[in-house]
Image 1 (cartoon, rainbow, N blue to C red):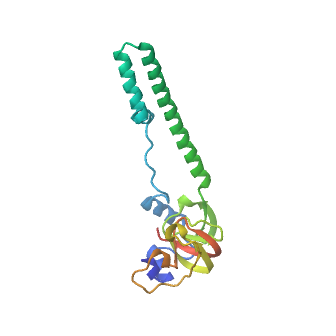
Image 2 (cartoon, rainbow, N blue to C red):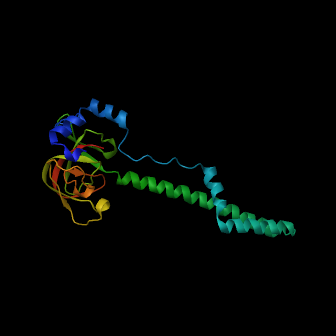
Image 3 (cartoon, rainbow, N blue to C red):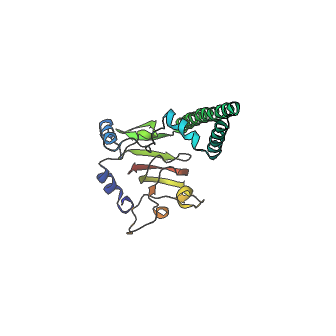
Length: 208
């Protein structure tokens, strides 16, 4: 547990240093652990989405009604019902993929940037390119892009309400915690992905 380690032990365990990783080290870590993003579920095919539109209860009732119309030789009613069913499936399929595309566009727009220290120089990169061992700079207004251990703290406060339910920002520090088991809310030398920095700044070594 990194909250129980000193700053020096943390850097040593992560194979990094205060000046950050080299680009070669970062690339090696990326190949080992992958990108800093959640794995997305594979999109359904057009045919699968189209067929799924017929699983709705009202559509099943309409199909049943079409069957009765066929049995009673009411061809006109059968054709109208089948037309409605097919148009409903087509529209449902189109709406599904439009919504999926809109969600993808929103995710791309909201993808945060991260301030990282690489080879002693500060640069901004896409947050999904962060790797374990990276040293990042967090400042007020930043969304924490990945879990990490604070190695230098300058009065930083973080809102962790998404994790703990507490709306009050947490005061952070960079010293180790001498306890065996500590809840996430009490790991005040750690930061966690998607929480919000509300005050101060800090240097953080990415742990996960």
